[in-house]
Length: 314
Image (tube, rainbow, N blue to C red; front, side):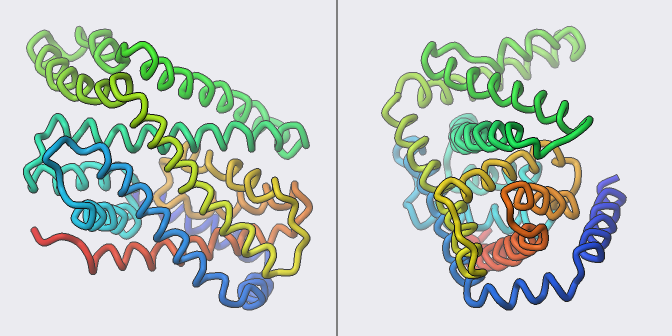
């Protein structure tokens, strides 16, 4: 199924490139000059920020920062080069931490904490960006309804995580208990026990350490901000007048790609089409959106290749 979806996504990408004109895309990329180098550096720093959040959340005694960053870059290589997204990268990351002596339950809690804080900030940016785009009529027909539904989901997600941080009441164990009859008594009880141990460690960071939670959110905001800077650099290199909010709206708008099109490996085609739609709604040529998406693929693959070079030994 994933191979079929990958082929379908590549077919959509080919259609988008044909519609925009390959020559036009190449011309825009050439005009951007050395922007791709800055994009690679900014994305590498973005990964460093996410690795730093993990390192700050590890139980003591934990790993050194360098070892933690090597694991984080290795996980990026798994995510990008296998087209599996977080479905394989997050377990692979956990396996590497467990191999280095971090208890399994605490490893899962730390990885989930980092991913949750990343998603909360991403959801906040997506919420703001989508609301602006909705107000400008960027989405029509059934797409409009789907985006409105997504906005509601984002609000519920952010509220759930913040609520867990404030109250200290977990959400995962109650959810598993609801489906325990479907799993069977013995299997359900075993799964509930494992998740409860992990969620206890997670809540110890979210609720018992509010300073750590706020620190992680601020770091993730900085990391996401670097991605908005990428957009600003590209638009400025192409000679456009860029309003201060434009990169943030674009970055917020494209955040939902990974959510809506998570079933498409690499979001091929979907990412390019969505970027074109969002940039065009803000008054920029659609070809710039496609070029932005393709350049982001290049910089992600370069950083992922670096992850292979610095990956910790088995």
